[in-house]
Length: 499
Length: 95
Image (cartoon, rainbow over all chains, first blue to last red; front, side, top):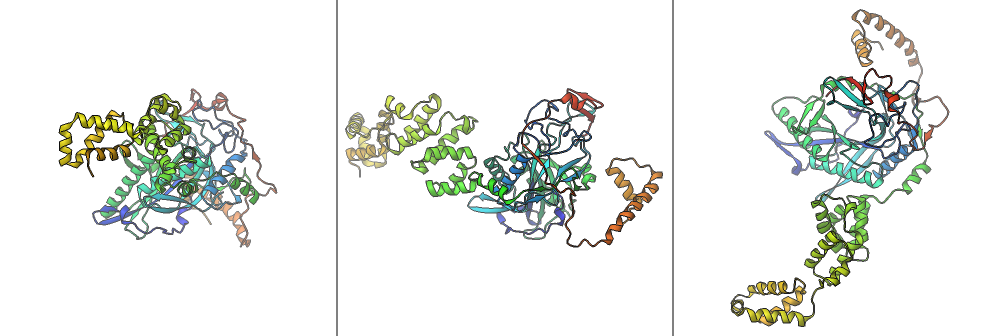
């Protein structure tokens, strides 16, 4: 981020030995700050009327503005401004009613203007925060700023031996650069931060968070220091496009820096690239010289200004955010904070859960959703939207278990039937005779038959009462799993004369 | 404020303008003359004055989020020295 050096860094965290990295000379602490580029969800580009749709043919989403033809002028997309403000509100951040667009000058074939329109000294959003659930503690990660800028085009290098191919479809698409404070202290925290930020953006509908398509990329600043000591020199790992790679890149980079420092060397402040194939980071020397961006206010654009009413209107339209939803699930449905966190990772799963849990046992609903439904979806690589079992059906299964009509074990069989065949769970239970047998007469009959057929076992159980499990198992088998377990146990004890 | 020969070369490189060794001194003189002229502004007291980003007394115009442009890749690449399948082709740049 520009101007980062001028910033006074305030250490808000207490060193935590659990995240220390062991070196030859003792423990080290890794300091991480992130710059996340999030593609703004909009129909058209930040300063032109061409489409943002992913996957179109080369240069189809390009207007003469995006191709930087002489005389073309930028006109800002109001929705992109709204999206940036919404995101700022979601990050509990300061919204700046006046912000300025600057030109960041550099030459690269995927940047036809010769400069990127960005915001330098006066961004649209100032300081905010993101909360992370790390096991049993919640940590606060500071947001330094959020600004709007243009994306660049895309170069493809593997189509020709001596030429690169340039596609400007992304050129001019609106990005939000979200800069964190250097508050992260481990690769796990960094991954949790990316994940939480993605969740917030998806709730807000301001970025689709699709990392494979490049809608979210991270530049990661990494440095190491002795725990609680002075900050070290940082390196910036550019353009990391998955959470897993982010974790691997940080682990590698921290170790590399520790090794250099412990062998008496110094860290060069530089830009590095993470190579997923080798799991290593390497220096991008060619970028070094380009770091003189000669920012100046873009004379083609006036300052961006709006009033409190504009902000208030957007605040009013914000959806319930993950932290609030999680707290409400714990409060209203009695689920554990962990389950609430899992259920609110995606807005869709929160909605599904509420449809299942409303008017039912919230904990039971959460268990069935997380263990059975999510387990099954994961196994088949399906998303919740593709689930063959809808919230109404899962709710009906939970009802049948809650009322004692079926046992939990039969519930799993029922879930399987509904998953593969569909249908109304209550009807399936009726039609296929899956109802729990609570009629003691029927259970007694089964027990009597088993006792009569196994005189040897009856002798043994008298000496060894734990053998009762075998009898219960046999009876359950005969009942097709439908005998009410409590009733069966009680009756069996009575019949065998065991206390 | 004045620039030396090394700065002249650096500015040339950043702007992708070729400056021959025998031209450096000429440009250095011209740039310093310009800087000297502009330096007259230093005489004005600007304490507490906000930097001006625009002289136009109007607000930034905004447009609706609608797709109104694009879909003419042939025209976009028409002036490029080299193209294939509507891609621009440039000398290989690989990181």
